Length: 100
Image: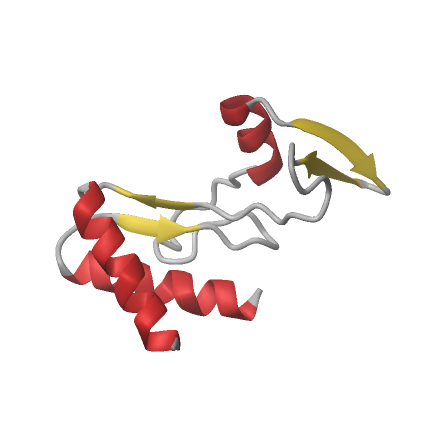
């Protein structure tokens, strides 16, 4: 989770500095990490179920995704931006290069 948050933070920082809205969701709380003035919880599992039609199952008190290829061996995480696709992909590449 630390890797994901550092990487997501790098991508969002680059996009926001270029004037494009971007944010990512804290995988533990469901809250936005950049725009912390918003306290709306984003349900990752519900989103994947609704948007991609993934099935879910219960694991204790948690609902988990049943990915069509990897089963329950996935952990959903979302990032949002209004940047154009090419700008977003360039920010992703820059964050990946920084990790290399």
